Image 1 (cartoon, helix red, strand yellow):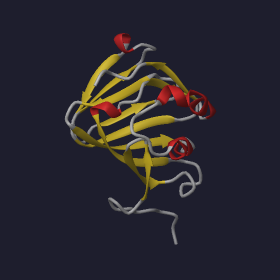
Image 2 (cartoon, rainbow, N blue to C red):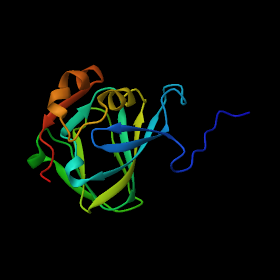
Image 3 (spheres, rainbow, N blue to C red):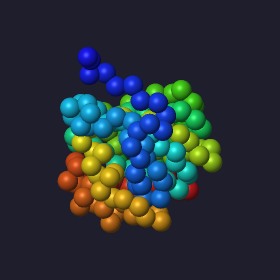
Amino acid sequence: MSNALIRNRADGKTYRYYHFLHEQVVSTTESNGAVSVLRLTMHREDAPPLHSHSREDESWVVLAGRVRFWVGSNSLEECEVHDAEPGAYIYAPRFVPHTFQPLTTTAELLVINNPGAIEGYFQSVGSADARHDTEQADLLAQYGVVLLDNPPPA
């Protein structure tokens, strides 16, 4: 028996993160800490603040919709801006500032973190009517995440 994992859409455990639903496609426990993979559908107002990670590299695969990525600087105005279409793969190594926002009404993405410990943050925030990232700054810091600038305007 191998340690391979095959998981179809909607077969993963789901949980609320703010007002939208995450599907845990692969958990850090299932991968022995190597990776965490989330599937999410997000709206324009779901964009996270510009931030960086010190403990993991982050990648995305755009499954549906169009998504704009800001990368590489501590302010949105100074970031490089790239638009990603369905099928696009985006990679941001640790310490590289980034954020992202759908250009379409919604976008579906796979979010991949190597290693996978950041999923503990998402699960601990739980459900809320809107994002309150600055109120979570201390919790984010426990996971090596630093907020650098506001989210892109919705």
